[in-house]
Image 1 (spheres, one colour):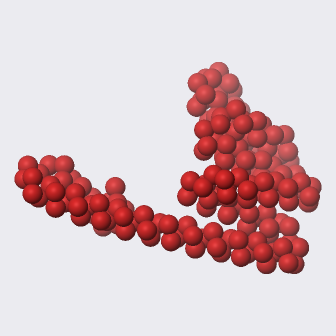
Image 2 (cartoon, one colour):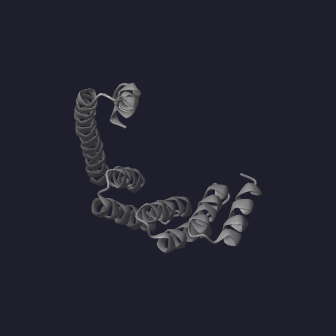
Image 3 (cartoon, rainbow, N blue to C red):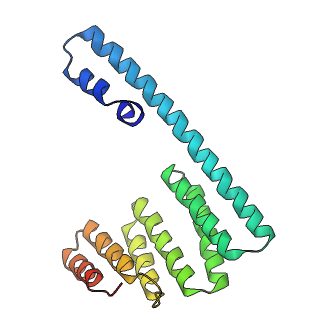
Length: 178
């Protein structure tokens, strides 16, 4: 996998098709080294992104720009989620939810609830994901993309194996005006 991400997938293919044991060992070691390098680079990028969003969050907090704080905490939560740090992701998600509640803007609340749904879906908690997706839908306004929330609910029902409910929401998402 690292070979395809960093250089060429040819090395992985060569490993799979070689009949020479020494060549296979050489390729496996090379691919392992490449994978370790990829992980190191990936970790550096996640750390750098998280530092930037937490720094932005501090600055926005100083000037009390809650909408910008929502954005920064949302992005920090996403970085943590991609990096499999669910505890930190949940911390930033809670911050985002609290800020959205404070500004009492239905669009921000809806988006934040959708982020909560994504968080719970990615942490294999489909019932919680469904709860937050439906809550997000309940906060939609004329300015909100309801098809996005409907399709999200449909996808979660589909993952739960509830095809009739999935069909209902997915069809509804196709029939919206936005």
